[in-house]
Length: 235
Image 1: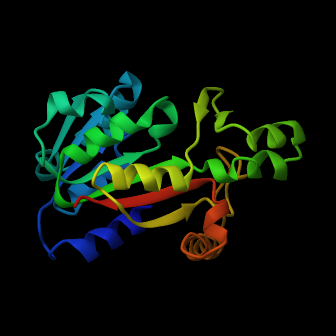
Image 2 (image 1 turned 45 degrees about the vertical axis):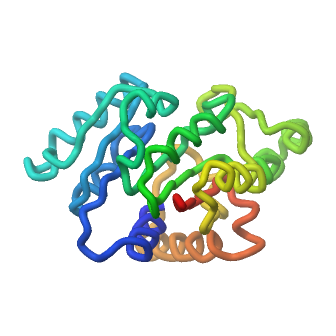
């Protein structure tokens, strides 16, 4: 996803412009720190105390100049209207968050509201149109059959969550004034990899990344990816 974000930035903003970035549900801060290292001003919003502690620890190891470009805030992505003025950001990231939100449309409208005209809204969601793939390939037929009829599922850490459909999100993004500009598939070939599995050799890793990158841009492969990366642009 990092390469996809870089591609979108390069294609939509002048070279060298210092962008204002909001990372909603920043987790351990990996993407936020990468953008701060690239020279951008990043605000990270996180509601989980453990994730926030990890992000603060990671930030503390960065040089002072990078630390000065990052602001970490305790908060929920559904509360952006209480924290920020309209048009406050050039980029809003919301990666791996919507699956925990029962009614995502109001939250998405709030994220679009804090985007400046021409700003980029980047979403990473679980793909409801391919929800049967993981259990089906694992031989869990009951779970696979249930996935055809419901966007709700249990994730790898045992939490009940939900997935989103591309068509529905495309309609939502158009309705909130940040219509879909492009989308990618994420984890087309690697979704069954076990957590903590050792990475392949350098040559194997390079091949894996190249194959995932190509599949994530190519139909019909991207349609069956475990995750979707959607990029909307504020009108």
